[in-house]
Image 1 (cartoon, rainbow, N blue to C red):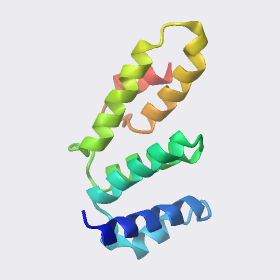
Image 2 (image 1 turned 135 degrees about the horizontal axis):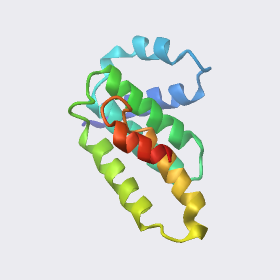
Image 3 (image 1 turned 90 degrees about the horizontal axis):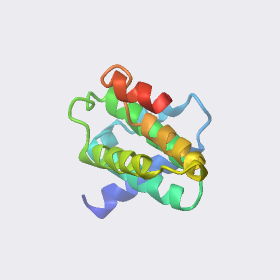
Image 4 (image 1 turned 180 degrees about the vertical axis):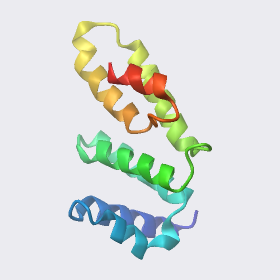
Length: 130
């Protein structure tokens, strides 16, 4: 991906994060040329950065990216970055055995839920809800 396109993705993501709730669709329609797997990958990179900074926007962005992937018809062939992220989250969940880690486990389950389709993976979705 070239630098100019990456900058366009990041600018769109910043606009999505700051736009009033409910206006995301309009914003995406205005930038329909950027709706591709590259945008989803950039969203994950930005979400990872936001998470490392302790920002609650990371979870929202991941959830929005998952919804966008579904809308774009990419759930059957989910981008590798989303699958990789989900696997990493599930591995961390499995490793938490101690009661002191339950807060972190709950956060991880919420992150995973943003990446899992209830319709396509009902068992995993239900397990994460629990």
